[in-house]
Image (cartoon, rainbow, N blue to C red; front, side, top):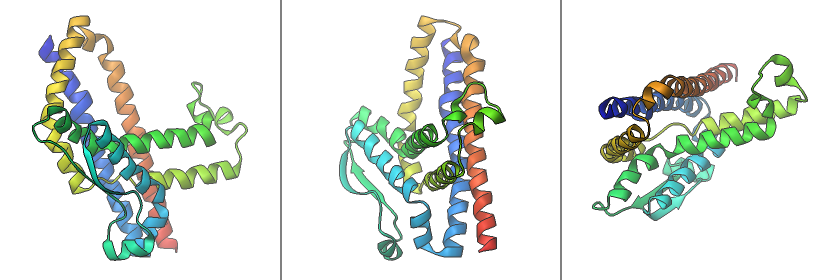
Length: 237
């Protein structure tokens, strides 16, 4: 039972999220490349300013949570400076390689922008378009009390945030360096859950799978929509 539980958690909490994040990150990188090729590096700073700040801020927050030392941090590089440095933001951190907790943190630090940006997207939606959280979604509910400027502001902020979903090579390197310990952590979680409920993955497995799969499907659809909007804009202007 423990092995089945561990394999289930491995698929749900490791393989599925990483594959989805890799796909979304690649699509977002393509979107950013379109912007830079058509309008220049400054345009990426203007369009993706919210995403850049949250991206780097998420790295920094998780680094502090896992007791890493922040050596250098810049949440946002001004457009003029970005042209010369080609960096829009950065967080340099260090840790003790023999500290298992800090090494484990590398996994979460590498993937932190997804956590932070998704959380901010939900807050923005809760603020400007709370109807989307209604359990009974239909056209009447979604449009109730909604104005065009709400939608425009929501769309601009969501696009800006989404442009921060592209993970760098350094982000993926951090992720892989902590992945072995994270897989071990999932084994401990599987042992605990199996002790509480030996067939928990049979009881809740399908519900969790549908929830996580549906969540990533929505996020990928959003990244695809932003990509389409950018393609249309770069062709029109």
